[in-house]
Amino acid sequence: MAIIMADQENRTLNDKFMLRLPDGMRERIKVIADKNGRSMNAEIVELLERHIPSIPSVKDVIESSDYIAFQLKELLERDPDLLDQRTMITAKSLMRTLNELDERLKAAQDRKTNEIKSSRRRQ
View 1 (tube, rainbow, N blue to C red):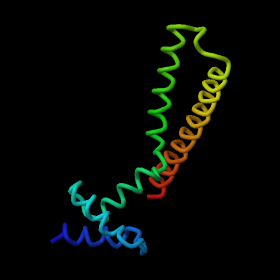
View 2 (cartoon, helix red, strand yellow):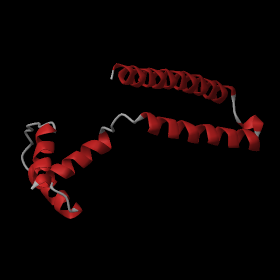
View 3 (cartoon, one colour):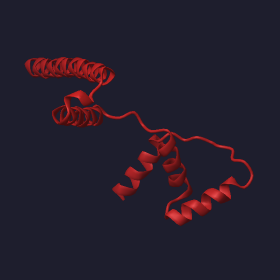
């Protein structure tokens, strides 16, 4: 019973959007959804996700930038002449941005730590 109620609560929290479809599109979506073993709603969400990606999380961005940094390092070690000036400028810009992000994350973490300490003192 609690699971059903939680599902009902989650449904009410999701955005609802009325949509008018051109003639025949509902049937086309239904065929694709059935083929993929999804509801029509899930199929539409999947199609939208593919064309309108969500904003990546900080973790995703950091992982991607770590991978890029690793690849650039590997390229440089194999052939230092391979990287042209434009690539080096881009790499330096990426490093500056990552350093700024690191500083902001540390500041946010410090603020959070201070808030927790203040909260404990008040208790």
